[in-house]
Length: 237
Image (cartoon, rainbow, N blue to C red; front, side):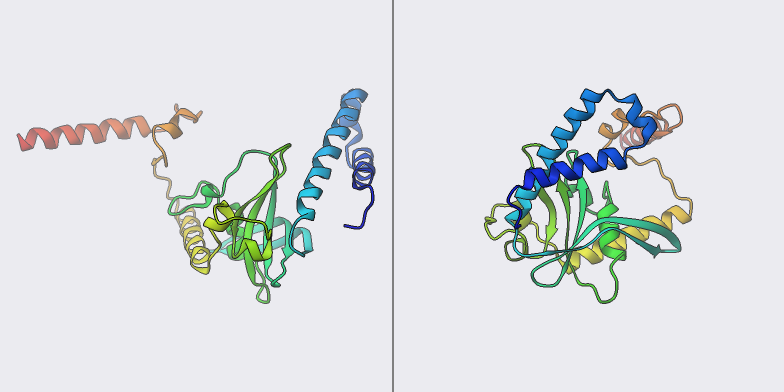
């Protein structure tokens, strides 16, 4: 917050990262000009993100790349949380960085598309930690934002949020957390039991994006169900 030239600060870290963290054999495959342009792109993007977060209500980064092991219905998961923030009210916000187009709608039960953050929130918290919410940090040029579920985002995240903001309209609740826990435990139990029904969540849309048609029996099942329906109609007549 006290840096007079945040851009120069970021640029220095980007240069150090590209020099020290990028594996030599990968660096050799990349043209010098490409690396220069990538450094400029990253500097702009990270600087924009820091400007965005500078407007937040007071918080503390409690941990980054936090490794935690959890047990769910007999399954063991080794997790790595991108970031944990301690908010103004002393609760924790679980943050996962994303550069793509993601949405908290993927967490909706009873058949969530993505349970990564609900898994972190529901099972990775320690006994003395109180969860205040979970959010994607969407780091995309011109579209920087937090998207998720936060208890009272106007009190703990951004004081300028309006009631129409998705963060305000869809707050994090204890009931939602219990719902996620129950759903994830059920999924784990079904996995252990070997249950793998052919039941696309959004058929036929799901099937259009699937590359396993030769192994899948969804068409066969659909034909059987259609045959049963026709038999029932004939019987009614």
